[in-house]
Image (cartoon, rainbow, N blue to C red; front, side, top):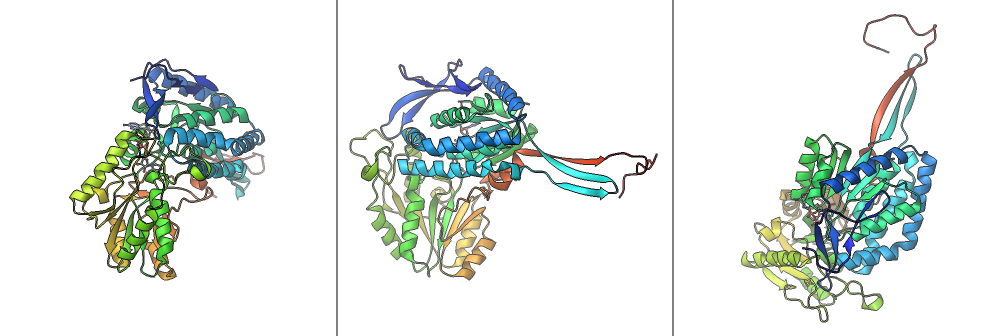
Length: 505
Ligand code: NAD
């Protein structure tokens, strides 16, 4: 229900903020205070159709621009983003809750993709084979798809749109972005920046909304592809629906990332990295580590070291700056906080020991904020739902295993395959790990192995539906369609007269 007297966050259609006419809204909270800061528009079918139609016009214009002119826009966008990123970080923190330095981190990882996209002419070049047959040349062209849909999750309101939009736009497409309704303002800020960089109206559209807007994109014959990032059940729905409607689709889902610690590892380094990767962004990262697999006899010592570090972590309002900046901000909503607490309850009921319990944390001066303290669990049975399901909060579980093999088998038995890491000084074990583990992104003594922009991001199994990962070469392949041309310039000497046989060399 709409809160009265609050601003309503609009769409961005035809190159301008566009107020909604649907009469549907959702509240947007400041998670650090628990206060509703604004309402966001939720599109109806008519608004969705208008956004897609505008994007189609934007595509007609933008795709007609020369490569040189398009590249100018990409460079301008990169310069503006680089100069103005503190503004965007403040917007992310206000609606998501993550601390400012972490918001800046996600922008920098998104900016990497913008920088890759500035070099797009090289990546959308076709290939040319001269004289493939006598007097015949064969060449391939890479053309844009048209209007492409991007549907993003709450946890990276800037980075995830930037995984896709710069590459899609560079390749000549028009993007309709449907951001998460929980933190919708970063998308609008990016839309303003594209406009300032010189992108024609309609080539970047923001459609605010929920399932109705998503279904409008999935069912529109004008939308050529869908790039989705979010939870696994929705990713599967997106994949199946978009594919049924004949669209190209990449749908990235949830995760449950394990860190395998071998007995030879430096346990101080491991404890630091487990804390960073488990509790950073309050665990609301698809590449967060949620399970530490400790190959015995290291578990007790490692738990002591992690416990020691947790005691020094600060939790508070992520908007505080300088020395006052806490290590961790709140969770996204009260509902999500209750869900995370519910998983800790389940772990306890299933016989685990809650070594550090964040369930009852209250932050002074922010009593209504959605805070949840860093939580450490020992002895979690691998049959517990707290082990098998994604928690998406600051909850780290240590599971004791007897060997490397047992650890790898546990990782491979899960339904997700997003990221994983091994900590060891044994190169042979690390090499075996990268070969045997059924996961898309692997860290060797690196806990959150998010690939750089010129490689591609994506998991295996229920962490990615479809065969195209995000950004890198996969990104350019996904957002272009190839044509192969076979050409001959006829002259009397070579044209060969009438011949009904199948063309041969
Ligand atoms: P979510 O699935 O709830 O929402 C993602 C998007 O889908 C949002 O834009 C939302 O409005 C839309 N949506 C929600 N319900 C829908 C429905 N029934 N029909 C159609 N659309 C719907 O995910 P979230 O809570 O915003 O994000 C957290 C999840 O995203 C976690 O599971 C996390 O692991 C995952 N994630 C994965 C990656 C990755 O790269 N694999 C990256 C970031 C986040």
